[in-house]
Each structure stands twice: as structure tokens, then as C-alpha cells.
Length: 339
Image (cartoon, rainbow, N blue to C red; front, side):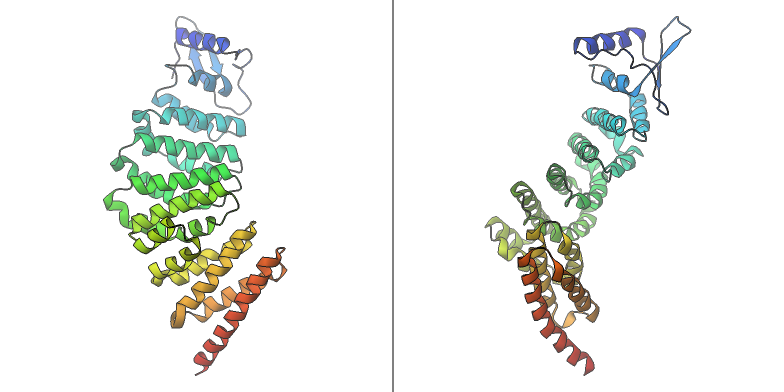
């Protein structure tokens, strides 16, 4: 795509007035993608560096077409973290336009930005979340529904992110996915939700009050979406100590799955999360009754034994008490299996 000379000059003047002089920014960096600006009537062409191009995107009337979208997509592969972050910022700006948002939803661009959710940089993960939040806000439900299913699979990995801002935004965006899904996709969304309700419940015990509140709000919306009235009532009344057991009662066929989903939280960095995971796991194993498998009991036993060296005395104590209870369960099961 070619930029008209008057448009380029107008952009440069705007940057200068904003205190962002572009001198030296038209030299391309090694390995970077450049953009040609051919001045009509001239045989020469200048190349915009990524930094100048992204600055021009901020000027009104610039960078609002498909060519800019393709260029920003290319910059997401750049070796520089700064350039990738600026590219995401440009995409967030473009996604605020309804037409551009519709163009983006069916492109390979989404796969690239979904990968950004795993980026080591907190800023890039945050910007990727902002992109999806902005884009979803511009789409109708029918248009957004396929995107919601993709996000429902990827967002749970960010519930335990080291950044509280990323955690809170991932919870909020997960809520948006449930509100935007269409009837034809609800069965698939329900399956995705059942895989994260344990995670949301355990995050209600996070040390950060804002994270705990955000996860509780998301769990309430999950309960409404799944039609789990008892769980919804317990959450609304603030009876957090009853949520784990109520959750197990609501979906008895998946108790064994819930045990597996809670296992990673035994090694969470927060003692409050480890404590709640132990309580939930102990209750879940007892709830299994005669349906519990020998393999499940052994996995839980081994996992709790690993907490003998936990740095927190309360965690070690609770793990020991739970093991004592499970010991009697194991002995009962052994006699039944022998028989």
C-alpha cells in the first residue's frame, strides 16, 4: 500500500506537534518489515520504520484499511518485543472499528493473537486480552459466537497468571464469552465451562481480594449459564465454605474429573489456594463413594504425601489430616477389592 505524500506530511506534522519528532525513524531496523511511501511524481521512495508507522497509526484518518491490518499482522512475528507490543496496540485500535472487527474475526490473525496469550511478556498478554475484549464489543452475537469458543479454551490458562491485571481481565473476558455465545454453540460452551468451574472456585480463595471477587463473579455467571440454582444461591449468599460441596453435588457424574482438575493447585504459590485444594479434594474423594477407582485414590494419596515438606505449617497439617481420613478409605477399599 502507498501513502500519499500529503497524508504522510500531515502525519509527520501531527507527530511533531505532539512532541514526537520522527527524525531518524525512517531507517528500517535489521530484519524488520518496512512500508514504502512513494511520493507522486518522484522516482524515490522512503521506507517507514515500524516505530514511525505505529506513530502514524495514531493520527486521525491514517491506518484504517486492510493493508494496515496485514502489515500489523506481519509485525506480530517481529523479533523485538517492543515492535510486537506496538503492533498489538495498533490492532487494538483497529478492532474498535466494527467493519475491521468483522474482517479480523475470520482471519489467521486470530490464531497469531491467541498465541500472544502465552507470551512471556505480561504487557503483550495484557494487550492481546484487550484486543479480544475490544473486538468482541464490536461484533453481533452471531459473529462473535465462534470466537467465544476459541477463547473459552484458551483463557483458563490465564486464571493463575502471575499478573493480577491479566488474571482479572481474563475472568472478565471469560464472562463476556458466556454472554456472547449463540444457542447453537451452547452445548460446546457448557462443556468448556464444566472444565473451569473448579479453577474459578479455587481462585475465590486467592490472596488478592480483587482477583477473588472477579473469579467469584465469573463462577456465578457460570452457575446461571449451566442452570445450577443451588450453586447460584450459595454464591449469592456469600457462603463460600459451602461452594465446594455444592459444586460436587450439582455435577456428581464429574466428581472424579474435578479431583484431577484440582490437583495442580496443591502446588500453587499461595497457601490459601493450596489449603482449599486439599479440602476440596478430600471432600471429592469421599463423595465418589463406591464409584471411586483405585487409581484415583492412589493419585490423591501420592499428591498429598508430597505436601509433607510444604513451607506452610497449616498446609502440612491439613494435608496430614486429609491423609488420615483417606487411609481409612483406602483400607476399606482394599478389603472390598480383596473380597
